[in-house]
Image (cartoon, rainbow, N blue to C red; front, side, top):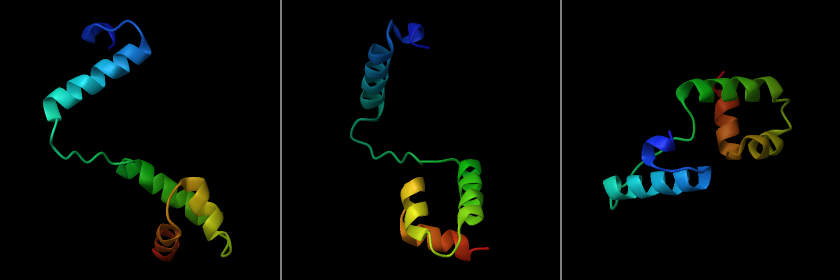
Length: 77
């Protein structure tokens, strides 16, 4: 892919890609989701499996999400 954009190294490829995105979308708001629906479903299943009633803070830290989100996931069962 880097060769297609005229870059020979990873850093150069990343910089080239960012420049192309800015050229095309500069000034626009772009939403980039953190996970796909399948990834989120897998994450939520893992959280429910690990949840023991007292580890909300630990799970939030491990998965990089808010404690409120952990509560929403375990209460959705």
